[in-house]
Image (cartoon, rainbow, N blue to C red; front, side, top):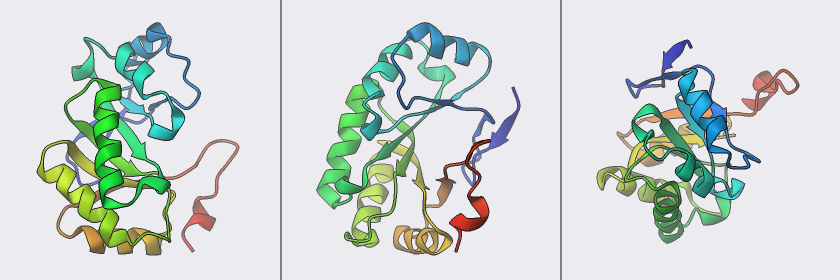
Length: 170
């Protein structure tokens, strides 16, 4: 399995990740993905799969780079903190490798959301911060609000069927 460095993190992850949207929780499937070298495990609080992922990774935490996402309706400071704590519990881990904002929420100031993300990093509950489905302008604003902690990724929808990269960054 080919690997790449994730943004400015310095961490090498598999180029092919294991997405858990609609994951049914068969531990053998996730274990097999790890055996094949797919170290990047992607989940989100809104998928409802974090607990299944956590159970499937028991005894293999060291083999996985776990990414999860906080939902836009939880972007107020206290809700971001609570959502992260719930994700940690559901995933049965002490630290989220990559915690991402699932999609922009223009009704909540990005400074408030990023303040919570910054505090999650400073307390060791999160290693790296990312965003998902952000335009270039939204990414710049988020990085500005975050300060000196780099945003290491912007996960966008991209597949053989959906290739909106050129239109996503207007």
